[in-house]
Length: 200
Image (cartoon, rainbow, N blue to C red):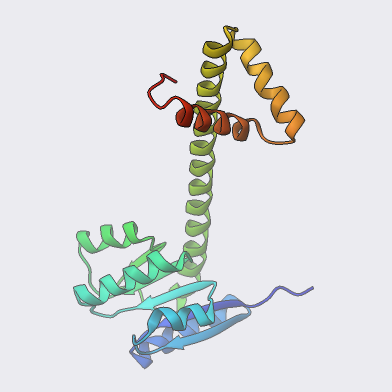
């Protein structure tokens, strides 16, 4: 089964500059290119296209235009490359905060489009992996905290040791075919409802 062509949106009000991007993209293999040349109703139009990558060319952007493009970046959750002619450190920092994968200053040339596209996708994927790992780590920490709280409740209420409390939680999880953390959360929630002033 052949891979689908990469859907790429070019956001550019300047036809000449958009053509440079399009010519560069033709060196990237099979791509489906969509142009957006005015900013009216931008987010719904992007949602309708559902692109894989967004290329934004702003020439000499105003602060308002930059902020609008940063809103696109925060919303889209896609690899985004932004080409500008001039910039400053504040704009670069804002672009990074907004999730722009590649912020290219004074680099709009056909031969640079493919390398920029490759870097944009790679950076986005690397950042996405880091976010997933961070989310998983936070979730694991929260689950561990819940289990510790649940063990403490069982130990206090039944006068048992930590190992036995843990064994009770595990057995309950197995009997109900649920995750250990789910059982722990239910126990902690019940304890909060029944004994809101109690120490957990």
